[in-house]
Length: 64
Image 1: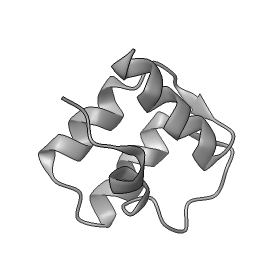
Image 2: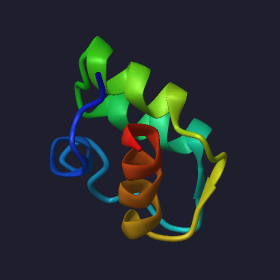
Image 3: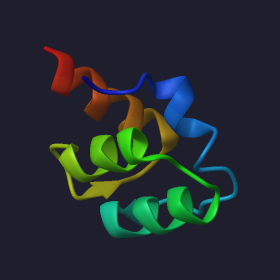
């Protein structure tokens, strides 16, 4: 089970886009993300993101 996009975005505050999955993981870890959040980022079906909306869409793709 994945976290929802709103839950995830609270751990990605201040990140500059475009960005990579690796940067998302670093930012989330820095902001205290738990294992569930980190596992969700790790499982995202994309490696590059141009905006927070791209991250939300990738989470949606995981649920489909």
